[in-house]
Image (cartoon, rainbow, N blue to C red; front, side):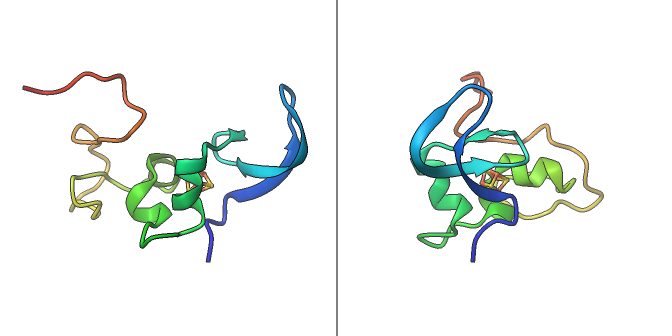
Length: 89
Ligand code: SF4
């Protein structure tokens, strides 16, 4: 299985490649190889649990376990690999 938002393209407005590459239709850009593991559900990863773009797009709340929080909508505990680098202390 793969994320329903995963596409393969050779180009976009800013890039032109010789071969197709993983492209996320949610954020409208090519995905990095490590994220493509999530997109393709490799190694037990899944978009619903491990991708902030997928979760935001589907209105899923985010918590440390990746499970949907009761009531939803609060993303104050959201974490990810592409955050600003700010850490709570
Ligand atoms: S980046 Fe996230 S939303 Fe986009 S295709 Fe990959 S898993 Fe799906």
